[in-house]
Length: 220
Length: 220
Image 1 (spheres, one colour):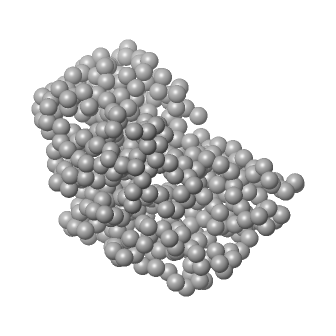
Image 2 (tube, one colour):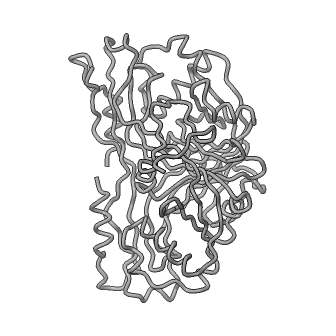
Image 3 (cartoon, one colour):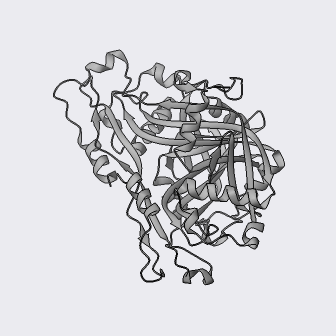
């Protein structure tokens, strides 16, 4: 399977020309981030909560405290959706209507289950930490059993999905190009600033290579 | 009213020490951004869609095409929630469990209605554009009636809300401070890069002051 089947759930209606259902493209957008907006329903309200994640094949992994209301709700509902968006630019047109943003976004629909096995839970937590900062996990102390016991690990299996990408300049009404109005884009980026060591750090501990690498790969 | 009443809908259960219901604090977090995740329910799935917004007092304004599935769904449901989050830092602890992020987030719960009056619609679209880039609107050509007709403007009235803020260093287990592991924070920022003029711009049109100001206020 190279793309998700298009049905009424994942079909992009507005801006369909910017939509794709291609699995490789969707996975690339997922892998470019570590925070996704997970939906749940509470008291009739659809609510979304930003959560750290990691992907492996068609699975998205989430974690939280065993008391986490959102994770409990999606386990009970057995399904949810996750939205991930990367903002790339403001698009400033000559008319209000054509103002837009450049972005890469996905909406994933899938089923939800709990991971119970401790070895698998630990491997997933490693993956989530390393998806935030590559190679971080190996520098940490191993997890205590009681920490693992109070951590809920949830597996979300992507059943269908869509991506929307806007990556171009201004699209104004043909007539408007003659107007004496500035139009263009303002690129937007999420960047890292230089790491700040914990004040309580033992003397002599330098910022490790994996953290410096993260900084160098994410600074402006 | 200085803070939202706490009830089961908006009460923050996890990390309650980071929660606030203070209206001024919540409004400040809303006003620091222009993209929020609006929830809706489709086919039993809670879905969230990133949308541009602007706030005025206890109202959040959204807009989109008249065919927008999400806007139609929340108008029908007459209520929804909106989540807005600003990521400020990665918090890298000595143990996996204490890894976290610094952030400012709000979840807003409220009722939804459609704005029909053209003058009010136009004023709201002006506010949404100016919330993206201050003072942009006055440089644009006026909206055409047919553009206004195909634009749906939705008013969301905040009925209750909560904010969560984490703005501190690493919190490790007391025993872990002796470990020879680097811990600290990596500040994260969303920044603007220098504006790129549209290739089709009429000769002699310079980048205007409001766009340069946006750049200077948002560059690293």
